[in-house]
Amino acid sequence: MKVSMTVNGRPVEAEVDPRTTLVEFLRKHLNLTGTHVGCDTGQCGACTVHLNDRAVKSCSVLVGQAQGAAVTTIEGIAEDGGLHPVQAAFREHHGLQCGFCTPGMVMMAIDLLRNDPAPSEATIRQQLQGNLCRCTGYHNIVKAIQAAAATMAATEPAPTQMKEQLA
Amino acid sequence: MYAFNYHRPDSLEAAIGLLRTCEDGLFLAGGQTLLQSLRQRLAQPSDLIDLGALPELSGIRREGDQLVIGAMTRHAEVAASDLVRQSIPALAALAAGIGDAQVRNMGTLGGSIANNDPAADYPAGVLGLGATVVTSERELAADEFFTGMFETALEPGELIREVRFPIPRRAGYVKFAQPASRYALVGVMVAESAAGVRVAVTGAGPCVFRVPAMEQALAQDFQPQALDGIEVPADELNDDLHASAEYRAHLVGVLARRAVKAALAGL
Image 1: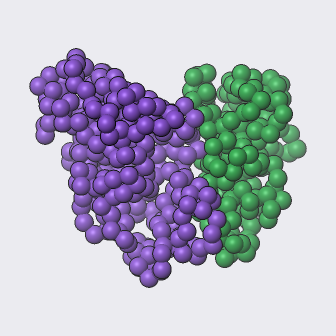
Image 2 (image 1 turned 30 degrees about the horizontal axis):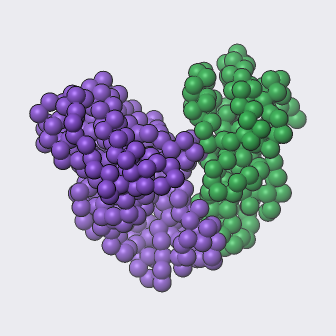
Image 3 (image 1 turned 135 degrees about the vertical axis):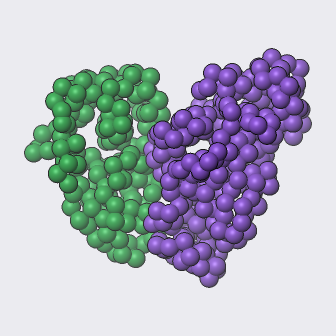
C-alpha cells in the first residue's frame, strides 16, 4: 500500500507492506537511523518520535496510522547544524552513558517541555516512565531536562517552537 | 506479524461496512495493545480497519449532567481536559495514570474498554461511574457491557461511538500500579451520586466487578471507616507472580478507603 506523510518537514511517499511499523519505515525506508529500536515491544521508549507534535513509541504505531501526519525524529529537531537546547543540555550535564536510549529520551523531553515549560523533578520522572535507560543514568537525564527548561525559558521562543510557527 | 489488509476509512458507515464484508476483521483504535498482540502473533485478523481518520469519534463535551467522551479520544486528552478535570476529576486522574506518556498519547477510551483487559483502568472508571456505552447499534449500561476476561457485550461489527458518564457528586480512583507495566495490580473507583454509591474494582479479578457490601456501607456513611470489617473474598481473585489472591483482596480494602478519601478531598 501507498503512504505519504511529512517527516522532519519533508514530504515523503512510499509503497510499503501494511505490517510496517513507523520505526521500520523511518529506519529502513528513509534511512533515519537516529530513532532506535530497543525492546520492540512498546516498553523502552528508545523509538520515541513525535506524531503530529505528540510523543509516541514508533514501534507501536503502524505506518498507516501516520498517513498524512507530520512526524519529527531526532534528526529533525536541531536548526542550522547546531544542537537543540535539550540536546545541548544532555551533552552539558552528561545525560547519557551508552547513549542508546538518548534519542527517545530527548524526544520525550521536548514533548514534556512543550506541555510543561517548567516541570518539577517529580513531573519529569513521572513523564519519563515510558523511557528506560539500562545504564540507569536517570539522575543526569533529569538534571539535563531541568537545565534545558531553564535555557529554553530564557531564550523564548525556543527553536522547535519557532519551527512550528514557520511550518 | 501475520499479513493483513489495512484500511483507513473516512466515514463511520464505511468502517462498519468494511468490517462486515471482510473475513475476520478488527477495528484498530490507538493500537497500544493490538499492535503488540499482532507482533506476538496472538491475533491474526484478515483486515485491520483503522479508525484514526474519523474525527467524529473524538472529543469531549458536556450534555446536561453527563460528560460525553468520544471513543477515539486519547488518554492524554482526557487527562488534560479542563472539562473532565472540573466535572469528574477522578476520571482525569485515572486517564493520567494509564501506561506511560507515549501510550497515553495514542491509546483511546474505546480501545481500552473494547479490549477489557482485566487490569486496565478504564473499565473501573466506566463501571464505577455507572456510564453508558453508546455503540453503532445501541446503548449499553456499564453493568451489562463488561462480561468477562477480555470479553464484552459487543457483537461482531458493533463499534463504540462514545461513552456517557453521569457526573457524580464526588468520586475517587486509586490504583496500586504494577511497577513495570503500570497496569493496576488493583484499582478501585468509588463514586457517589444521587443514584447511590458505586464501587468498581479492576486488576483483582478476571473482569472488573462491583462490591455491593462496600456500596451499601458507603451509602450509609461516605467515610473511609465505613468500610471497616468489609472484606472481599480471595477465592475468585487473580493469583500470579505479581501478587497472591489474598494480597489483592487486602488491597481492595485499602484502596477503596483511599478512593473514598480522594473523593472527599475532591481529587
